[in-house]
Length: 123
Image 1: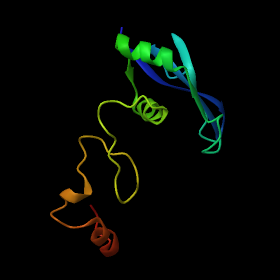
Image 2: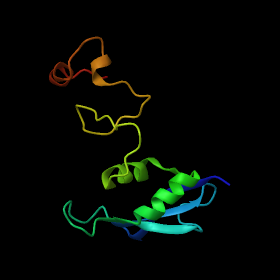
Image 3: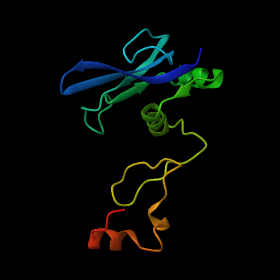
């Protein structure tokens, strides 16, 4: 049984609310959960304390046992201070997190990101 830490969606249409749950990787998104570790509310303000809450002791336990977090949960853990060993590189043009497989903007034959943006080249 492969255990994952991922988000389960609650709330209604256009008003999402997520629980951070530990579940078997083969169950559906909103299926049976082993444990609820916290919640994430993307609609709340950025400085609002009701935006995210995690049981850090239980998260550390599940990570030590071998549970794998999904990418969104990994970003939430990074924000909560449980950063993984690798840093999350950020793309210069759009501010999104890059995967390790994606090249950075400096790898485009020596062309700076400002030049790509001003000329309108498709990369």
